[in-house]
Amino acid sequence: MDREVQRSRDRSRKPDDAALDADTFHLLLHSILESPKLPNQSSKRFVQVTPLVPQAAVFSGSARLSSNSWPAGALVRRMVWLGSPNDAAAAATWTALFEGLSVSEEDDVFARFLQQEMSSWCPESSWAEFEVTERGTLDPADRSGLQYPAGRFVRDLSAIIAAKDAMTRRQWTSLLEAIVRIAAVAHVTWLCDVHARTWNCIRSSLDGGGPVGETETRTAMFPQRFQFLSYGDRALPGIKDRASAFLQARLGMNAALWTLQEAGISCQPLSSAQSVAATCESLRCLSAGQISAIKELLDEVSERETRTLLCKKGIGSNIMEFARHVLGQRQAANPILRGYDQGYALRKRGTSNASPWVVGLGPVSVLALVHCALAGTSGPRSVRRLSQHLAGYGAIVDHRDIATNDLGHQLRMLGLVLDSPDAESGMLLVPPFEITQDFAG
Image 1 (spheres, rainbow, N blue to C red):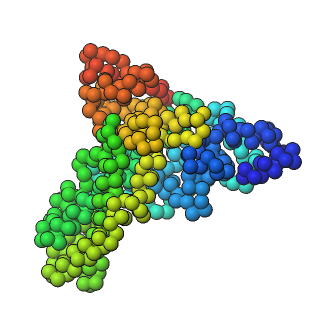
Image 2 (image 1 turned 60 degrees about the vertical axis):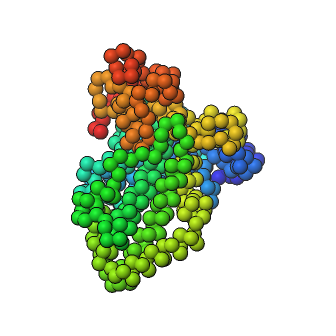
């Protein structure tokens, strides 16, 4: 698309219904809307713009810039369906997200102008709601009373959508991005944790133990208190441990299921506590020779694929790169754009490339999380509520430390707290926006 704009510049032409000439439109894409390239992309020629309006996707490719890029939207769709109580609620949330991302007469003047201008330069593409055909859901019995990141995300997504009219589109898309970023990584890490716990159930059953019945299996499978980030501490080692455990779990569960299949024992997909309990019962019925063969196979493959299991290559390495890329503050090749990303959840501890990534929220992330934590409430709330809200995404911060740590400083700088001797830790949260729409959390 950038080549077409360049050709129009050379010919001094523009579309009939475009307001900007080719030179001005080129400047709009490459300066006003430009988002930063990474240091290793500084010499590459491609357009990368802020996804302010849907039509911007035509001018800006994905992060990988390849024809077979992984569609990140598929993960968000799965999160919406997994975190919703039923298909109807998930479909309603998905439609509300589509309507929020669409540009309407309620959007600010610049957003409407930009959508119209980009549509003039690239009229063949259309913006339509994606119809979801694959709907991964949790078993209702497993979901009951379970606290997990996808469920937290769906409630926060509704709160973010309700806040759209209280700010400009640029501000709103930044808040939405911040919530999607922390929720996506929390969801993937939670899935790794569930896989590892499921493998523990199956591995125990190979030794004659393991959970018996759905209730016991459900307790063993799903973490009651999920945690993978600790505020102010290094983030990547904990994520790496879970990614490695996930790979080991996949290896072990596949070996167990293959053995059952070869033995002529039917087994269900391991998607619920009921199916895992049935699988464990079947594994306890295997002969000693069959169980020994499973363990020998695991030892052999584990030794052969050590680098893969240690996340040095393959799926584990991809998970690590995904988490760092999504949560980490964007490292810009252009010094002018180094402050572009303010919706991060990880920041560099120092200026060196070798400096570790530590857990620390950017200003936009703080705004988004405070808004979501207070959505649907009335009256003052202490910073403990924010701490509890972060825990829903597996991020742990002691509310008693907020008054003195970086998070407390951010809250004061953004005007999101009132110091009160009657409040816990002396700090009361202040809603960042006045919401005119009703919110049902």
